[in-house]
Amino acid sequence: MIARLIRIEGHVQGVGYRYFAYRLALRFGVKGYVKNLPDGSVEIHAEGSEVNVSSFVKEVVRGPISAVVVNANIKEATSKGFKSFEIAL
Image (cartoon, rainbow, N blue to C red; front, top):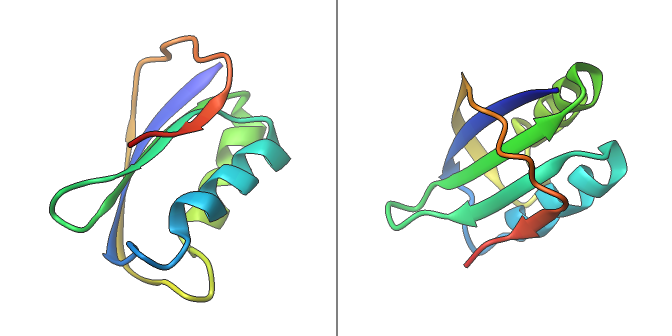
């Protein structure tokens, strides 16, 4: 099991980005959360198998067609044992 903390910057709020990430997480079996940050970026904590998390990360850094991703910062993180993937408020 691996975990990644991902920060997506650009025009990523108000464009369905969190729901896009949620659907991808379900598709790839990734656990964790996605949330909007006050500075306009989006934070994602993703954990699961190396293959699944890597596939998930490849897709979320592109974002949905309605978003404009300017920067994606991906860091190794500590697995927290999430049981599901949530859209955090």
